[in-house]
Image 1 (cartoon, rainbow, N blue to C red):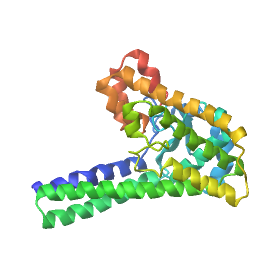
Image 2: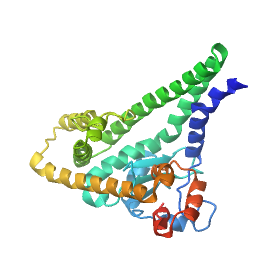
Image 3: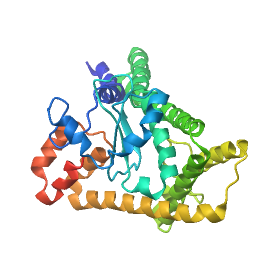
Length: 315
């Protein structure tokens, strides 16, 4: 009986995550796909008008026409969910408020990175492949080992496969964005990544910040993404191939504006979590990252003080 335990670790959890992405719905406040008000609620989301600007690119790239784009404070800043393959579920990209107005070119480079994830069904295939590899490890483990080592092997395999596959897909999303961006959008992407580095360097003023971030502004614990330094170098190499020079005098003020926006967005997101308190901290983090099951939003909507309900209504 104990031999089934490894199968209920990473294979089960990642399998559920893949299923959730295949059946993803934008977690609007008590309004889901089977509700007649669903489409009208989508049109009321902040930033919904941005989609009309990028619709021609979506059609050219072969991305589903009903992709949802909206603004919201988000710990991940830019994030996506859903697939291009399972059209009965939603596909959505969440973007930081005011980013489009602050650095339009950087915004569109970042958007094309996220669009690549949707186009190639990364949100579904990453957990699915990791679950399959974890299941294979569990089968091998229970046939050759006792329960504890088999469980360790299964969990380790799932984590390692997910990390390596995610890192590869993130790199390929950068390649997609670079190949499909104009010269100015490439410069914008470079500005965004440098701004992220500068935000991390601000965090290095504290002891914990120095542990989290390197002296170059790269996040040490973010093993799912290539470093900011390597991503910037990739964009600069693409600009060099196109014989495009970078005017630092012109670029630096734009980087500072983007840095201020990133700091403000992350501060607001963390303040929301701090205000809600410890009991809800984990659930809210997951909600911001679009990984919370929809029923959690309904539970929270009935539980949290009324002054916080606008936060859930925006999602």
